[in-house]
Length: 154
Ligand code: HEM
Image (spheres, protein in one colour):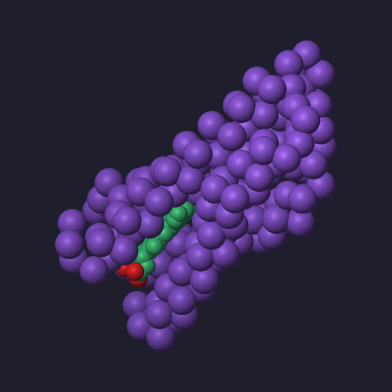
């Protein structure tokens, strides 16, 4: 294994995770509650999409970067066969985001939310909020596992 390349991959991995999950934390703990408080139920989804659209593009890039650097490190370590629970968790979190951002959202999630919002805007925004909370919690757990695991605590 080329140690320098491994360190570069690690740096890129952490930068990608900081931008990506930091953004998810902002959207979940600041943006969504602020929209909920300030907008009428019928306006919430529209306002959310307006403010979140730039981040959605950014998170596609950072998800890609985290995935490429992560799989590179795994390959360089020869760690495919000895993966621990936190490596599975990182890959699981990455897979969920990749599925949502690149497949489910463009194919049907977007339309489904708009249809739901027409019938019951209050409930559909609540579902959106819960989904973000769940994604943030599992992301934080995998950051905990990643750092603690990579540095010998687990
Ligand atoms: C395809 C998905 C991913 C793969 C294959 C992957 C793989 C890896 C590998 C091999 C390491 C180095 C472990 C070591 O040095 O022993 C690592 C570290 C780490 N990963 Fe991931 N990862 C992925 C996704 C994620 C995600 C989604 C997160 C966060 C939400 C994350 C957060 C971290 C953190 C915080 C570290 C520790 C960095 C350090 O302290 O040096 N990874 N990852």
